[in-house]
Image (cartoon, rainbow, N blue to C red; front, side, top):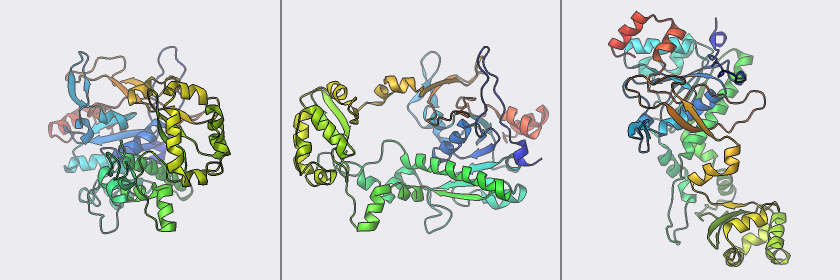
Length: 436
């Protein structure tokens, strides 16, 4: 059989009385995940959520770096913090964890065998780092020509920076993203800032997902896999979007301007009687409706009637609007504008965001158990895990929930028996040698 013919994710029985779980859109794909931290795991979690059977390979006794990136740490049943970091759960849902020491010949052989049965492999070692183990694309594609092999690095497989290690923060700085994030130098608190989450890692994971699915589609026609070269710096330059294109076509370097928009006014935070709110007025009709609701005639003034005029006269309009918005509480502004098709909302902290009734209605908080219906094994203190749901909503093949973010090596014996047919004696011997 080919790798694709083997590639069927194990079905999870539906709870008693529940409707059977529909297969995910990618339920026919097998993915071998050799990646760590965020960009690669974010990609493979996307694939896993859509039904792919993702096997996450981790180093025995240590695992993914993010298992230790805390606080915050999970608490045990008694509420006592453990040494299990919450970070890992953000990007490893729906995967099965297998521990293999790839520094050993036996471990390398196990990974080669798993790769021969896989459709996709994702790794984020330094450029050329897996060649010494015989686990690079050139080596594995000879064994499995249908393998789609995605490499995620800071700077790509070519170029003068290719050997360098790359992290999200470094790439945010190098790409210019930090130069347009934060308040202007002349303002209090001014200076370059990173985005509040590792946005380039996350974007790279999403681009890698798209590239892998494109390669799967191409394989339908060619019968061959291919190598995908994903670089954080490439992605960071691409997602500069309008700011990058504006520079390329005018030569004008964009500057930091806090929460305001370089090309749209009013599009920013405003003070209210009891705090702050956000107005995201993107066209002239919205501005006219805002002015009508607020009882102001600004939309009839030539200098403010068009967005181009409002951008030109930003320094006049915004103080006038701030004086107005301070006259009502945030909730009153939202009630006034929500049925006028004027984008207006609160500036929530994360707790308020998860408590929002719309967020709750959309089911964006997911609770899973690592050991459903059973007690965790000795030494394992975490069972209940909360994550944020996949935002991908497909009517016929929605994301599926099969596995909670796994404990380190939770599925080693299961996977090696199921995939490679290893018997208990062979597994015990590999464990005794520290290979798994």
